[in-house]
Image (cartoon, rainbow, N blue to C red; front, top):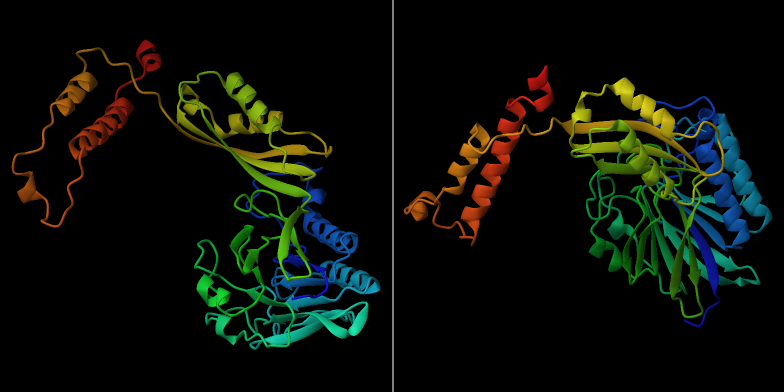
Length: 410
């Protein structure tokens, strides 16, 4: 290629001023932290662009959470774009389903260094070399949603021209039919990699993913996780392009608050204080690079602690949580018990033992081949698998029906 090295910042799904959802409880000191979290992450995004001296910033949709964003979010966005303009950094924005081009209502004026890609068609922006404006550093192609629902594929609309020394495509959509997200602007990975671009800057999927490295096809994830399913580090990607056009991608965590999930099997544990100690050890090793962590805990297994109430678990959650916003704080949003009663003890000649003995004597009928359809493949060990499954089910059923030792003592 023989071009000039440059850097770009790729972010998506900023959802500025979006509230946290699915949060069962929050301490009073935590509420302002959460209220400001998305805007704090955005401020750090602007810091990152300046500190890395990037040559362009790309947003792949859903900068706002809805079409009537708060004035607070609008002003924060305008000020951030203007700050980048003072450093000569252009901002390129492809609108998504939450901030569609025609439906978005704003009460501000856009800074001159912002370009919004046109709705329903692909636009091209030539980014000039800051040291020689007569030369093109790279070309960026993008398309905005005209409305909230875009069910057709946009991939075939992207056509790279021969004059672009290095080219990026910006698309907000669901590549590969990923679950958990609306199937807007759907595309197959092969639809993108065949278009001849060096980098696909994607948005819409809130978990970070690199779908391809030749060419690069990247979801940076959203900027700030807002509910338990949006867990782990959140941030943006900085791409470093060398003289030959090769790209090195670096993820930068920016979210001030991270969601994490902890699962603990408490089978056989009869003492709540021991469960609390084990959870405290697990929480102490979370880390994650954020200022603080929100945790949802799930307990599994068979334990006498099944008798504890939701209020009891709330007490434990409070005991495991920090009481003030210290650096690296941990706040347990909830403890969700998925517990079953312990299996009842059964003597050697008891009902459960006799039932399992019968299972052990199970044999496949000699005419099994007439019972199964002719095209059913025979799997070696299927008889043992059937026995194991029946035995497990019997233990579940009979164990639940038989009284526990504690109940027999009453």
